[in-house]
Amino acid sequence: MSSTFLSAKLSRQLAAFVVIALLTTAGVYFLFSPVISQIVCDYYESNPRIVRQKTDDALDVFAAYIHDNGVSVSNADLISQWARRQPLMILQIYRDGRLQYDSTLASITVLHNHLAYHAPSTHQSFRTITFSDGPASVSITVFPEHAMVDWLAKALLGLCGLVFLSAVLLAIRHKVLYLVRLEQEVLAIAGGDLCLPLTRQGSDELAMLAECVDEMRTSLLARVRAEEAHRQQSYTPISALSHDLRTPLTALNGYLEVLRKQNLPDEQQAYVIKCIDKLTQVKTLSDLLFASLQAAGAAERLETMSADELTRSLLGNYIEDLSAAGIDVDCSLTGTNCVLLVQPTSLRRVLDNVFSNLGKYAGTQVRIQSGKEDGGKIFWITFENTPNRVYPSGSKLGLSICEDLMRNMRGRFETHTVENRFTHRVSWTIADAGAPMRKADV
Image (cartoon, rainbow, N blue to C red; front, side, top):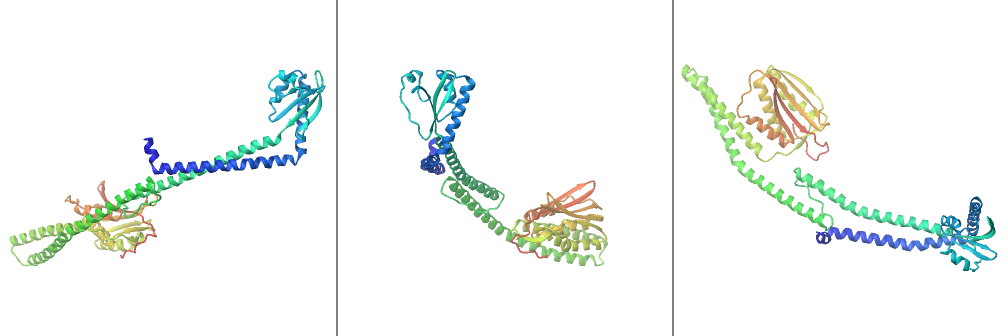
């Protein structure tokens, strides 16, 4: 598994970026660290007053410590305790010209044999301090520039580490954003948008994955189009035959109507009426067959239509027909300030079916309502009535066709029966008003 990880191009790219970022930040640190040290040392060298003040302060603190604790020159332990709390400082104690204590020496035994004399420097101050066993000369040497250099070096190291971490995170973020973009595009394709190409970026495994998925999308799109073409070829002759079948049926219906109006004997008249009834059934089934073939054919182009235009123009004509038939129509149309995607011919077929059922089976009153739901994303229209007679069970092919037609318009067609109230419900997903589609002709 480790060999596979190391052989992956994406892994090698990230590893190379990490190494380059590490070498760059390390180079910056080692380049600027001596420069900072030199600047600090030059600053303190040019300002000896600052160093002298720090040594005098250290002598004051040491003198107070000796006085408060009653420390003698020979009590090296107490003196060492204080010296250890003062980093970057040298403490030396002299009596009669002999060195009695040096904070830089490792043991007291060496102190008695150490007779070297250290001349004072710019970092060194002398003062006579009274110990519990008598006065002695104390020398303190401080190195404030080293403390400053140490602090600045740590700050530079932290800054270089932050730059290194930021560079690595930016590289990872670049790949993660590309991965998120691929996820969104793949989800769009899974939702049915096969015309959306995938973004190809770089030459690593993610780019290869995008290329493979895009080839799958292209292949699937070609197969879908081939199936649509094949279905269209199969649909055309059957649709033409179904359409041609309605012509002789219409003529035959006319002939039977002529015979029904003749003064025929009652027995013959009864057979003529039965023939007309059966012919009507055959014509209805033929119309449903033709409609179902149209629904299975090539989809009509989606076009934009405002909900207000739908309710005023299309529904208005149907409502007038119901009112002329003596049916009281109660309209409550709201939420019409939105844009829908429709197929004009298919929409008229849906409304023809709905209002045809209302005209045949509705009672004296029909209630039509509209509105929005799901946070304003769905626009719906309901047609509610109490039938004056039971809806025929039949094959419900017309309702099934309406469901297919509305599905092609990114909507839904539903029927409900609750407490003898029959309801047709038509709903759409509201479209973007700026969609690049031509306006539907009403």
